[in-house]
Length: 122
Image 1: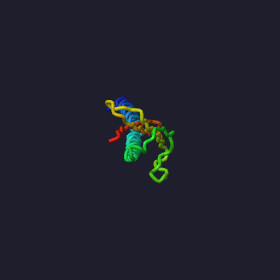
Image 2 (image 1 turned 120 degrees about the vertical axis):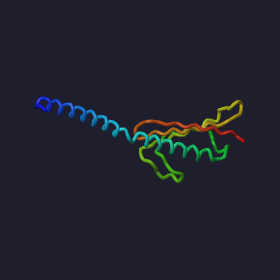
Image 3 (image 1 turned 135 degrees about the vertical axis):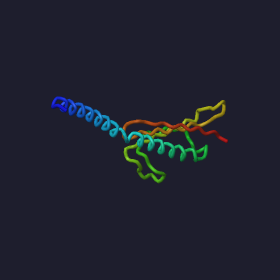
């Protein structure tokens, strides 16, 4: 192998390595995104389940401003997450009066996730 071939080989390998490391850095930088989404989903499901478990008459129409995520005792959980809850009692499902519960969670990355649940007076 000549000196020219050796230099060209080293340059090609260097460019390939730089491209590979750049791609790996990009992937590693976003690796936490799915975890944030799953935590937002779990938090929204927990809030929706807790609100849906209340008696139908105990669901007054209201909208709650976004606030830090809390457990049932009011203790802060998952710092950086904001939760907003809205209850709309003017909804109808095929003519049947219903209540729509909307839980919106904002994660530390700024993405939002909304879950809706519906309740009827059975």
